[in-house]
Figure 1 (cartoon, rainbow, N blue to C red):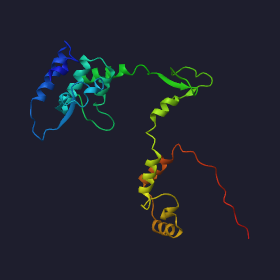
Figure 2 (figure 1 turned 60 degrees about the horizontal axis):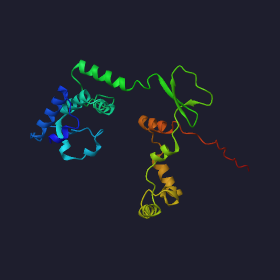
Figure 3 (figure 1 turned 135 degrees about the vertical axis):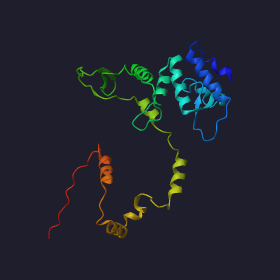
Figure 4 (figure 1 turned 90 degrees about the vertical axis):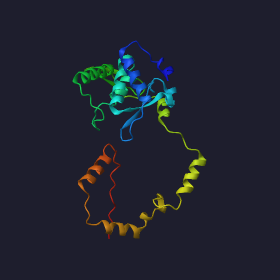
Length: 234
């Protein structure tokens, strides 16, 4: 167990406290009703090779988990460590961990802010090939506009693994005959079925929530050309 700690050992008192919490947690047995979380003794963002090493995993209470991530920022100077702690702080989606001390919270917010000063007060512009980070009050050069452009290699890396012809054929065979099949096989495209659906839904009103969802789903989408229906003359 002690063989892991030499990779992050420090003369700092914070390292001593951190090691003590992890060692104590390794040797104890908590009741089943105590909430625990799995913690990586060697941070997985820095030591991914130890991510699944059982010796590197320890069960901590929620409070211990937060304290350990806070202590790591005290003796390891790495933005990934700070980011891991930042993700544990309260946000719009909830309040998983809330520092009780205003001093601790102020120190953390200051450290988080220092990590983001590189782009503060600036924004990205591009000419379709090159990206530049300029000050907010700067004049945008000719042929440049707001935003960023990704290289073809970057775009390619964002794509998933392409399916082989054999995989596509298997998926197609598996879906044949199942309900919800798109295309002409869809029963909802038959006139008699469409009339039944229309009759069943006549008089029903969409809720405000449904209307909002429909509105949001259409935002940003380009409308096609307006089609004028031909009028039959007698």
